[in-house]
Image 1 (cartoon, helix red, strand yellow):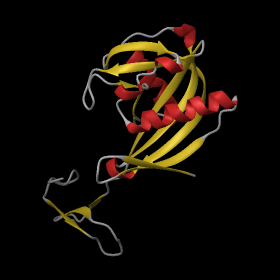
Image 2 (cartoon, helix red, strand yellow):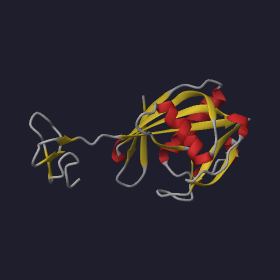
Image 3 (cartoon, one colour):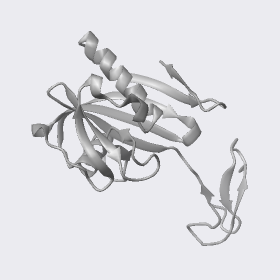
Image 4 (tube, helix red, strand yellow):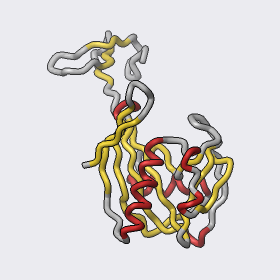
Length: 187
């Protein structure tokens, strides 16, 4: 950040009085500009023992597979965001949605919330951010071509719960290690 969004003057990265973190503070009007994690929300859309995956048409990770998900928008609930993202990325409608998992990913300042829901009429097609959509059984999941670690973790939990016949709500933290691998802590 270079300039204050309130008055347009330059900002400095400092620790404000009474705070313990660096913040952008306007040199002129002294407004503190807080930067907070982004919320990503999406859905495991289910249809006849299959789930909906989308092949990404945009960066990051273009050409790899993901669950329909994206950044939550202002003036919408988390669940509404998950349904909207499913519609945008896969021209698909979901119903009977239930929270399935929440992951904090501190190294990229994101919190992921993923729901389970029924894919209405089993209908989906690529939206503007997808090259392709597909309804897949577990054995058809392209595990080596999944776009993000959080999607892989979500699907592992989903199939574990499915085998047990009982879906829980899962919570975890994903940490990127210096060597590029990931560690996941569940609680």
